[in-house]
Image (tube, rainbow, N blue to C red; front, side, top):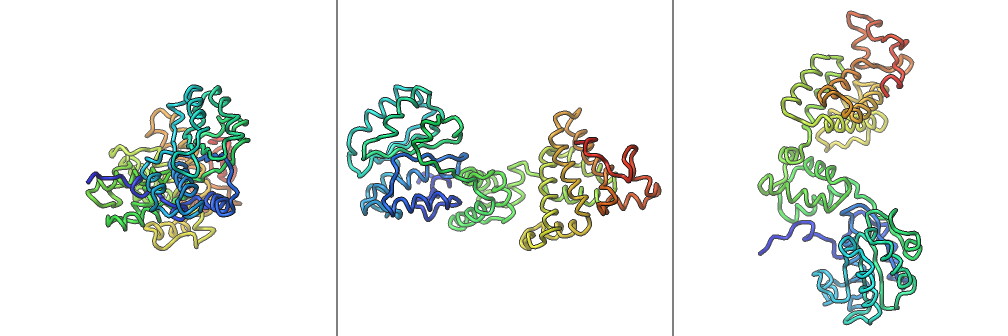
Length: 399
């Protein structure tokens, strides 16, 4: 039997199984149950968040043989044919390849005829922002006053490009990016059903790489299963994604907290030998510092099941709140300036040197690396830079 990719096999078939779009599901469910159906809907959102899936479920809800309902049966002929993509009265059109006025005129010509074998004829126009201005103008009248048997569903990743005359004729729903926690939970459920062993940390890496897209997360999971021979483990996923091993970041922060420049340089050289991405390193370092900052002010935000929970709590104690904020700002600005550096290695190591050289003002209660340096042979004066009384460095120097 032909293998079906996870993104297609596990596409939600009803509103109840749709993940992360509760606000849209609630509105559509109430509209279906109350019989208050609009003639045109616009779904907006990034790729892989459920626009096409919602369209298919809505089409089933309109044409299910049990009647218009928010809970389509999924087993009648209309529901099955819509799921299989062969229902004659549900038409999906890709506006990227059918963007002209002639294609739109042909679609509107067919729309006036009654459905062949359904309650409603549903037209789903994907990436609708790709239509030409003439095509948009051609559909305005029909979109405003369509035949009673026609429903339009428009979907786009770029609503800014849609004319306001079209927007005003549609009910607009903005689909949110999936939170990482939702993606991880969904992947755990799917891999459990597929009987594929997995590491929780590997799923967190996949969820982060998916950047809010459930389809991307499932595609990456398919790739990870193939990459690591029918399992999903952290080491294989890191290798597949080119993700940075967390141990490098932990060693870097330990060296920074101790004010140990030689140790910082040693870790940077080791990363260079392995050809790791310094941009990714600074991004991951900023992410780690963000979690440390929350561990300082909201300790309950650190969950015991996280592999890095012990290190987060340790750094929350070892570093002052001011240091964490300073390190975070240096990391984010350093990453944005990598392209201006002579090379990435120089940009990365200079960013780390800023973390060693700069310290919060004494009034901020700075400790950690600053205190360690102040206790060195140079004394308190060794931690100060010219033009920076008390060791504080004006943001303008490096911002």
